[in-house]
Image 1 (cartoon, one colour):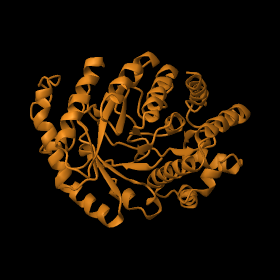
Image 2 (cartoon, rainbow, N blue to C red):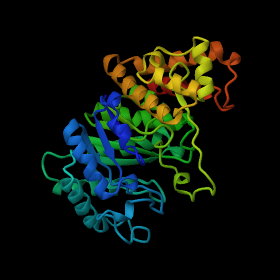
Image 3 (tube, helix red, strand yellow):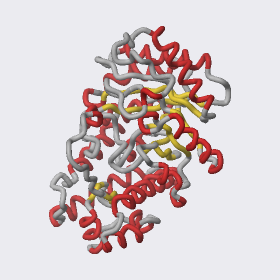
Length: 376
């Protein structure tokens, strides 16, 4: 299960980081990458042999931000047009293919949008858009069907029709996007929806379709249990899911990002102070102790250095390493959830963490979701 780096705003330094070179490749997203910057990324990737997948990212909420409008394929009337008309997408498909070819990307995701309602007609339309693209895409390019799910309302009964539609077409790769109003830094805990996503991934995978789950974080443990082929992630806390809150007007005044650090022993994001406490109490995981940014991060916390930048690198290394371990051991993901549940049970009452939301409840729900999924 290869790992992909989901490009974020100004994240080229992370892509170039020597200790993060075991990522399979990059997913270039126009929201955070102007056209000319994409060329620089491609030049670097040719030298580093990274694979590049172009995601036109048209599933944004209604007001596209940053660089989207500067890309040639993006239509001026996107907000007002009837996007349910297949003919509308013809020029968009041609434009996306041209961008993919011009930048010599290895793969490209089909255009998809956020509908008012996630109906069978909507999913039929986005697969039709995929097939239109399939007819024109030059050989040697991998094509991904972009499949957007509204996580908050999803139930297991929904996925059968979606799976039948996808498996009934000539689809080899799916790029799975979860749209949710759960704030990006919070965990997905809706058990019905978690089971539904896992079920869909499992059906597609069992039919020989490779599923790449976009915008992952700690929830990669669930998608791996379900059989996802690959996962993508980016700067920690910045690239998880596509909730409309990501596109709200910024709050006035300085914007301060606090570092949150992954701790696999509890499947939690902890503050820098909590990270040190867990380490001192010998509760840090083997994954933490073997992380190539562990020493640098400890020193930065001690010396009040660049903790935020190192917390991103620490997380990206964990994600890359975790997926590598899952490749070697099919039970690794489920065992990580079981271990985290035991740690919360055995040590949770004694832990006094900075964030009151760090109570481990999501781990219990994830474990229940796994058990429900396995009974289906």
